[in-house]
Length: 638
Image (tube, rainbow, N blue to C red):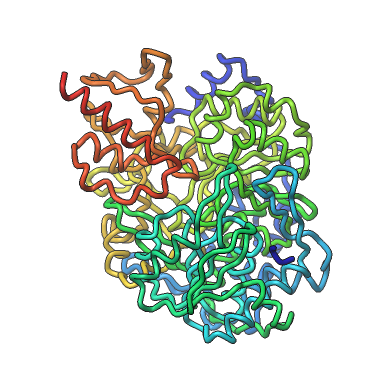
């Protein structure tokens, strides 16, 4: 048992042709109404000459130190105040924020809310079994975290160590993360779908001596043997000396001398755990993401800057207010789960949903049934899941009451216009702004999104649109020169640092510099391409290593995918003049369980480089790759 694009006017015109009204696009240029900056963000009352969202963004960029100092002092509880706001130099890849300050992340996420509202619900665990949700208050979550923190300390985990967490999305996984933060250990959450080889690689690189897992995972009605995967992984991990095993199901698993029953051990511990005083730039967590070669890189995020940025973006991008229920359906093993299931909502004293299941289990109405039952206000999901649900028809959405929804979010990859419109019209009934958010594991939080904005400001389907506070995007041409005009496309970079960005790659700072800072000296290179419209809005066009050059035009994956309409036997490209020599149709694409298309795998298949496909265990159904390989071989044989 568990313890308690390209062109703004083109998109707008296309939307109107499809019958989407101006109001359903959330007020297409109906004029700017007055906007009280101080009521919106209290800190801005001290920012001279600021009145309006645009002015607030300008101030956050031009007076970066003043802006971040004000929100850091107001939004975080400090054990010792910081002495310097930032010490950053993008030309050298040096990023330091709030030096001299000390705080504890778990205190900021738990204790301060327990002091004011101990019985407020912190977590709603939407278990795989529909209708069996479990709620945990801030008081209960703090007690669970403290017991786990004391347990880790008793077993020798100390400040600076790194604990690997291999668990499904559940309250005990959240408590494990917060317990690490409480005692000063870093956590390394590994998606509980990776193979034993992938898990072992991450454990070894993080040099973890402690692993936390469960006996079995449950997802979509299927059982996964997580403890068995851990057993296989640690065979090649000599640093691991202890594995804590929680019980998600009733099935007993084989135990070794290194294994401990987590719930039993936690019951021996006190519910009070002294929090460690952590420097702002101490490591909070590692999170491994695959590079273009498929070799994982452990991105390092630190304490104060990451937490502040996650909290601020959660509050303002989604319009979160006290009493709201925030429903992010991302797995806890990804950065979205870190920032917008755990740290952002909890830092804001919010109620956050932990979604263990899939969008189609036991039927395609799962999301919307959950929205009705839990009265979710902000819903944050992936475009791939939205496109999947479109196929099942509107009836699965309209069957449930969605009147609680106020904001719809999209994350993972750019959302195509048709999916945006369905999301807006059917799910949100034309009354909920759709925020198509752009960010990365490397950025720590949302960098470009339609919100926050002036009241009644337009939202254009398929565009990320506006940079968040403190974010200064830049577009670079193929010669490495800055593009200053609008109506331009180029490599998306950031011209100045922000607190939430990653600090390094664990054990490989040189790779960090080469990947993000050397391609365009003085800028942070995101690896993505973007288009800046005449109005100054941004649309993400896809990874630059997936770009096609046609007659001097650089065309990204998002641009192509947005205009391709697949029917049973044909594909129509309506906005590009392309010559396609071979078209291969597939019933399904290789996608991760979070919904991302694994384009790296597709490239390897096309290049006939099947020996370099890399780890496929993260795919929702690895059999899709074999189907594509077989289809490609048939094409080549013709």
